[in-house]
Length: 232
Image (cartoon, rainbow, N blue to C red):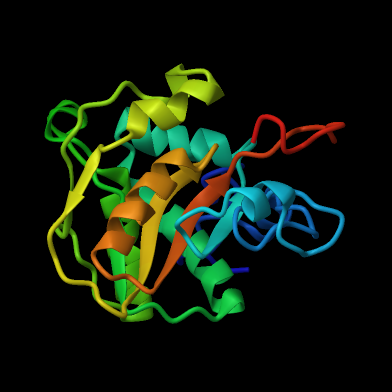
């Protein structure tokens, strides 16, 4: 599987005409075969999970390139926290491969926005960098500024799961008319889905008909849990 040409493998360093060599690509952490089509949570069959049935999210579906575990997590963290921008097109291409299989055709791509303070601190928006590449590859318009993050929230990863919904509430604003549009929201990682759901709620208010989450990786349990929906 060729990711990008004329580079050594970023994972093993082997000489290859691609960024991720075939053996490393085949070893990347995959999503479970059976998962909820809305949130990707593991389920016995490919049906909507109990959590999404009981509390339907504002988004329509989620597509992820990989599962959030090694080495995908290391690549995402290197991009996000070490400003290794050369990884953005590599991760984006992994997502593009999954999108070709899913055959979704949104009207617009919206990158997950960062608050201006966080953007100034980091110097870039990783979702924008990924989204720019995906939009170019799929020839879909990218709307980089249609949504803004108006609330400077504590990083979700630093909070207990139950506090994340409150933390992200009323964090976004969108003024553009999206009536009847299918929107694809691009982000790096989906954990609880609270941030994506909050943004999707705002997009719905602006008339969006469908909202697809396009993420590089989905955080999932390492082991099967007795009640997988209790702390999703």
